[in-house]
Amino acid sequence: MKVTILGSGTNIHPTRAAAGYLFQTDRPILLDFGPRTLSNLLQTGVDRHTIQHLLFTHYHADHFSDFIPFFFDAVCYSRFVTVRPGLSILGPPGTKRLFRTIFRTFPNFSDAPFPVTLKEVQGRSFAIGETRVTPWPMTHSDQQICLGYRLEYQGRSVAFSGDAVASPHLISLCRNVDLAILDCSFAASQPGGAHMHAEECGKVAREAGVKRLVLSHFYQAADRSNVVTQARRFFSGPILKGKDLLSLTV
Ligand SMILES: [Zn+2]
Ligand SMILES: [Zn+2]
Image 1 (cartoon, protein in one colour):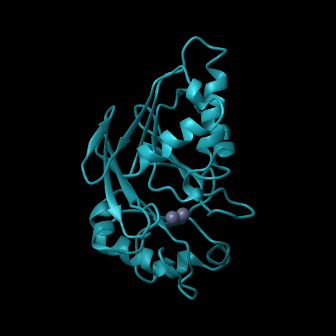
Image 2 (tube, protein in one colour):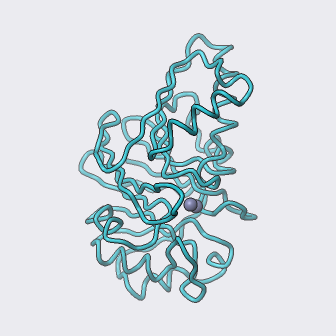
C-alpha cells in the first residue's frame, strides 16, 4: 500500500498542513482531514471525487476542518456530473451527532444527491474493500474518544496513533507493524500534555517492535528540534521526520 502524508503539522503552522493521511490500497482511504490538507490532496493527483471512505481519529479541528470545503465541493460538483459515488464517514462515538448537525446547519449540505453513511467505530476490526481496519481507543482528551487506526492490506500493516500519549493500547495498535506514524507534537526537552514527545515515540516503537517509524504532527517547537535524534535514543530502526506530501510504499 502507499501512504502519503497530507499534513504533518498541527492546527496553526506556517509551513505544514495539520493532520491528514492518504492511504492507497485497492481504493483511496482518507484518514483525518485537518486544515490545509485538502490543498495537499489536490497535489497528489488523486481525483478527490473518487474518495468514498473518510476515517476520523477525533474531532479536534486540526484533524477535521477541511471536511467542510471538501464536502461543499462534492455537493457542487455532483450538480455537473451524473453521479458522485457515495461517501462513508467513520469515526469515534460522537461522529453521528457531529455530522448530522453539520449537514443540517451548513447551507446546501443537505442537498447532496449522493448517499452519505455515518458509522461509529471503536475497538472492532472491519473491512474497507480488501483493507482490514482496526480502530482502537487512545489516551488523549477527556472530552472525546480519540482513535488510533491500524490498516492491513496484502500482508502489510500501518498504524497511525492519532493524537495520543504512550499507552498499552497504543503499543498493541502498533505491534509489529511495517510502519508506525506517531504523534510527535513535542520535543523531549519541552514535553506537554495529551501528546507524545520524540523520545516517547522512540520508546513506543521499540516496545511495539515496529519496523519503520515516522514522526509527525509537529508543533513549531518540536519542528525546530532534532526529533529524529531524540527518538533514536530508544529506537534503532529506520526513523523519518514526516513532511507534507511525503509518500511511502509499505
Ligand atoms: Zn487532538
Ligand atoms: Zn492534533
